[in-house]
Image 1 (tube, rainbow, N blue to C red):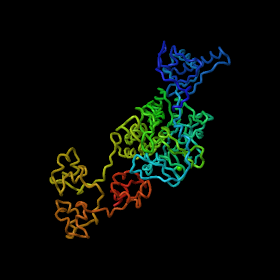
Image 2: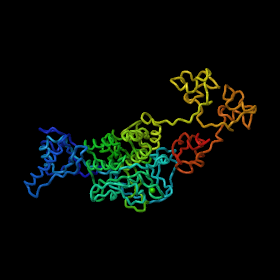
Image 3: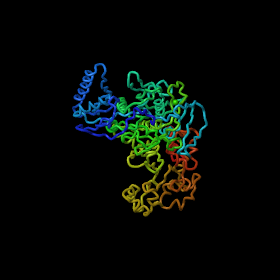
Image 4: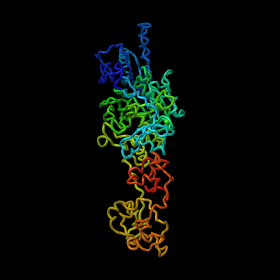
Length: 622
Ligand SMILES: [Ca+2]
């Protein structure tokens, strides 16, 4: 975006009001500015309430007067768009003629501003590097290097490192983005790639010659592949591989079809996204000049229609703002590399919300009909669809009938659970951190994503199960759960050999595994009266637990309440479970060291995490 064609860059100037005109206008339109009157301008003109008709008449009258003065020589106003909801026309004409209109229609006009250029954002030096499909060795040991990720070739298909970094595989057992439509406003999409689910693709043409399903630039196809590359045995897998893509091509000019658009073009395109039912808009494009009209528009999509807009922070490597990313209603996405470090080109400022993988990103290559000549690009453009796709995974699972609340919840969940990088807490380089789909998923699952990061409670059972204190059955673990009873009384009133703080989960006690008496129903040599329940009372474990062997075991060996029992009746469920990274990561793998604690709530597969599936992690089926 540092390569924006100079003639299309409008210098940012203070808006001024002059003379009798009481509305704001671009600097070039103010009194005394030295513009060339025949220079072409492109502006948003916001009309006052009930003044649309009057303004339109002034436009027609001025055209007619000019034509009368210079028959066959005059140039008419070109009304590009009429945005009724914004009360705004987008008009192209010579700046001299636009100034005359502002003067004539000053009673009808509320506001005039330039309609600034928007360009797709890509880092040119690596943009065209095409990687052939080839097996390569990889280190899948990423769980020891939580910040480093590699591209993995799995059964003929690339799982780009970014897919792993954003935790998509952990979410796949629960959501693949099915039914959610992501709108990609870009250079179109190569619809004929075998690495898309064609039935999931749709789009809108922005002119009779600019079709959404063509992409000579390769940029829009690459972004779309990161979101919804088909999960098969070729090419790449996308983060939300069952999501729908709605493609709108807003750039087409230039030798590579990677030309520019305008803020007004984005407004028009994003309205088409909304009308198509998209929940998310991904915009790997931007420009350095802000527009009030554009900002108001994206705010309205967010507030009134529940549409989440996500855009690239920019590749300038400096602190400048890029728009639309830097509007409050739009998520601004910074780029990181495979080691979770900020990309050197990624713009940093107080509007950056979140970070995502965007250096040497593999994705779908427009024009490649094999699906295997994957293309590697870098840029905040590549980071942006990672966030859009994570949002799709979440919308697919957590959408309610309240769409305007959903969009707030889902944006919050991604920001709250992002992996903190750089300075502690939010910073300008990474925003809230690197987007993490599974953490956001769990946050939303907890129903308590509004205030703090979710904590997975350990599986806890009061021990003994029906414990009450020495003063009688009134004083159960439930009683201790109220007010500050654990704190006040939890270390006194011992009963069944335990205080409340030892026996009750609510006080931090109990047992935090799925211990089962083993063998089930054990009792000691003196008969069924002397079951594990008997041993649970008083100091019976301590006094008798190492004697009175029955069924080959003492109470200390057989009864959970005495520190025995076991998981011999537990079965891994499903049997033979392994995690999303493959058979290496079985319940046996998790049994070693602290792996259940470190990884047991992630890497879900077959609908379960290790902590749910593996007995050694406290899961399985008794
Ligand atoms: Ca694929």
